[in-house]
Image 1 (cartoon, rainbow, N blue to C red):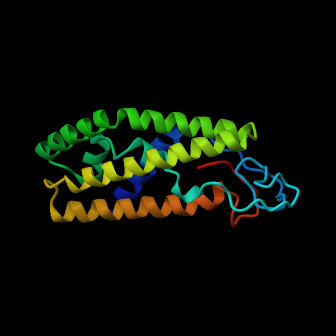
Image 2: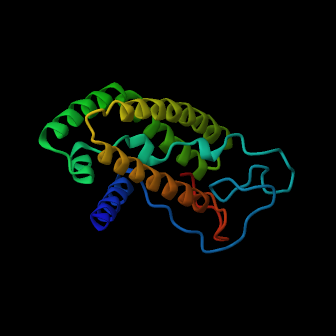
Length: 195
């Protein structure tokens, strides 16, 4: 059972890797400019040590690609929790409704994420900050909507609910473990780009 769940988590990770956008190349050097780095090899203070304060947004507030994509698709959810046919039908209806209701926000979040990444690549601090703030607001709204969706899944058995909560905790921990690497913390490999 655990082995099947780990395989499914691996599949989910692979799917979100495709949905999450481009792969981020690793910086071979270990150099980081003084004054705090931003995710595109630059520094928030221009690299000259002129301390302009903390970054204009908190990277931990940005939604991950998985959070933007939303809850698991019906097929994935069925495999993950071994849903019955009636449960799958109920989940599919609820998921379709959520995705239709949040389509504009999810599309906007994807666009803001890409615009932020582009601004980072172009070293456009103001553009990156604007898009990060927009992405943060969209992410907060999507998290609330997805949490309400999860609470509405009353057709799950107690064991299925527990299993789903465990999977979500594992995914959250994986995102938290990945985030410092993307922002150049802990590995000494330098900045990697926005999450």
